[in-house]
Length: 171
Image (cartoon, rainbow, N blue to C red; front, side):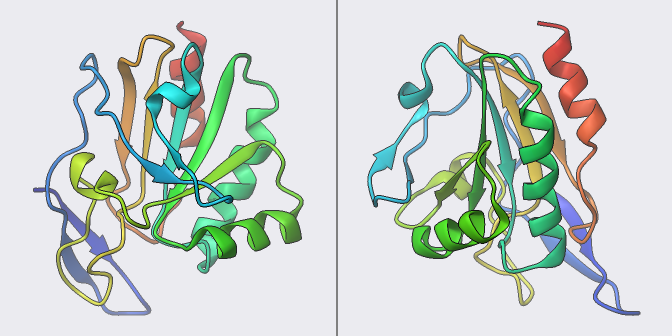
């Protein structure tokens, strides 16, 4: 279980996740997530590609939206890499967001009808955010090995984009 903070305004709330992110060097847990056509996708859908999992609570927040935009911009420079934007938002809302923002380099996937949040240790257990995912980045190589993880300790902060993208340079 990981402890995070959530600072809405002047208050600080401690929130807990159900587990820990997969360890660097381990085989990535398989997943089943829902795409914009309500089809299930898994790790096998992206066989042979490097995968950036940009895990966010909801696109309906400014920080999550900024994270989606940042990875969309930076993904253009990553060869053989897909950016999977994972949130609890319904696929319809994710699609509307990406269309309105002109995001073409990220693929929104929903945890709707999925155990992803539990399998990756990012399900928020308490507070008003219970049931959403914590903010995290997991990078998986072409062989489905985890090569980088970041659990953002303050849920209202953006991830370290440079550190994440540096992990891809070492491959």
